[in-house]
Length: 206
Image (cartoon, rainbow, N blue to C red; front, side, top):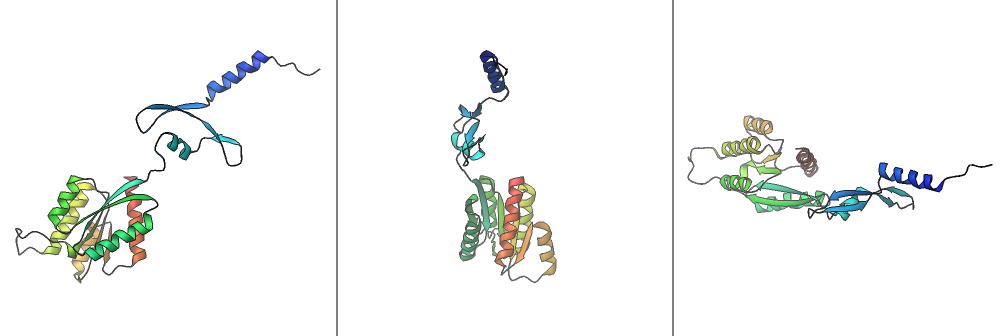
């Protein structure tokens, strides 16, 4: 004779299983409210599975939001600035919410960095100017290098430095030492793209 199952015993076992592995979880949504969401969902194959992270984010009001990345470009050549911005957008627009700011006076770059967070700096060292109030005997490239160092020490964010019309091996060596990546102009696009991707990974790990 087969085993006779006790209905009440079966119900109790079901309750015990639910306590150990509840079908709902309590999480805080984007608007700050606590929401109860199901722990399980049906997958494409029709089988029950743990709720996918994207489904959880959607229920909590986060959707598929992209990480916002603020990039500050120091450069007086608008064509080059636009090229850099469009190149970065073309490669990473599907992965990040990219925000660009630019200026070509060192003082304005400092002010911009202090006023709003920056995730990455791109500095064209020979295309950064400084106001006339500075000592006219000071070398503009040296001031640009000082600016680069100041950004690194103050904010600790990745810096990509580019420079054209420069053959001073000592300056190039110091720029390479200070920046996370240094490229002479003109720059090879693939190499610059790889450097930017590495910098974005650095940002995400900070």
